[in-house]
Image 1: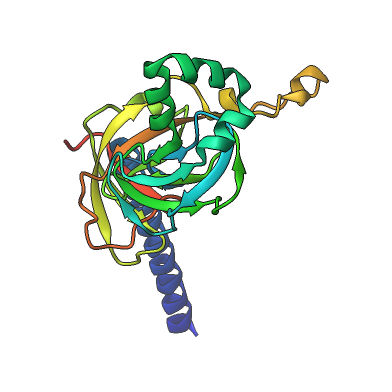
Image 2: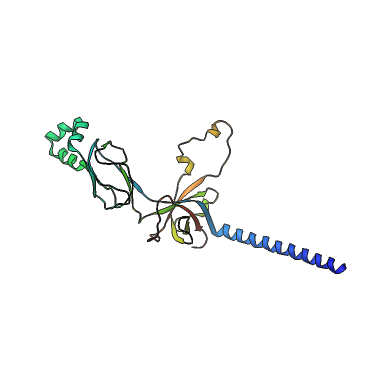
Length: 243
């Protein structure tokens, strides 16, 4: 009976010791990570998506843009009908009739050009369609120049600096870690750009929440051959104390 009691006490002490060691080890890992890394799961792959529009209202005479098509800067993606442009923009008729410079400008404007070299990721137009200035006919992005935008809590942003090394894990490409570099740090929180006002503050029921600041991380082209596209979710680990 006495022996079983001793064994029970020893087992209890061992369990307590194991739990204590585990807690100490977990605390050590947490402390080490907190001083050496800033991690965020609120991150996405981003790129400069450029809209393709027209200068004058008119009717599309041709339109050759298609999703996943690779284009070069200034490639002709389509044309507007000359007669439709003049009909929908009456003031141009007099200018074109008496001024060769305006006539040349109109001819150039009728050709719809790709503003950058890249890949067309969205197409909203077709032959014969009437189009207006400001209407997005298509969108093009350079898939060879993508980055990651991570939203870092304001409580941790003081640790982040341009040039720090970053490990990037992209959800759609498991078991792969991409290397990046902090390229820029935003000068305003994401909420400053929100279209929805903070009505809780005006109503007197304000609840303080941690704001997030966008940090742009360059992938340095290290994703070549991988299916990385804008909008993919990512997890970033910024090396704030190990550069």
